Image 1 (tube, rainbow, N blue to C red):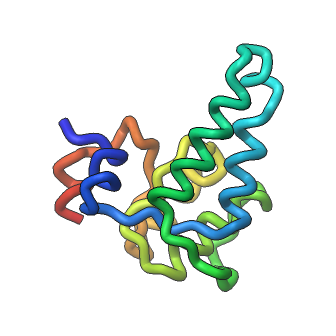
Image 2 (tube, one colour):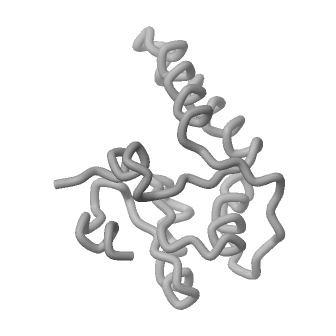
Length: 123
C-alpha cells in the first residue's frame, strides 16, 4: 500500500501551501503536548524540513464561500478550492466536517490513514 508521503517523494502528488500554513504547522508542532514528550524541537525541525523539501508555496489565497468552523483552518479550505485540489488530507475535525459540501465542489477531504490509496493515485 502506497502512503501519500511516498507519492510526494516520487513526484506523483503535489503539496501546495502558504507561508501562513507553514507557521500554523510549526505552532501546532511546538505545543505543550509534544514538549512534554521532549520531542517538540525534533518535530518542528521535521515539519520545517518537509515544507522546505516538498511544499509548493503559493503567495496567498482568495476567500471561498465554504466556511470552516475554525477560523485558523479557513486558509486550508480556501487554498484547496482556489487551486482546484483533488484532495485535502487532514486530521482536523473542523476541516473533516466540510467533507460533504467540499465533495460537491470536487474536493475530497479525508484523514491520511483513511484514504483509498488506489483512488489517491487515480485522482
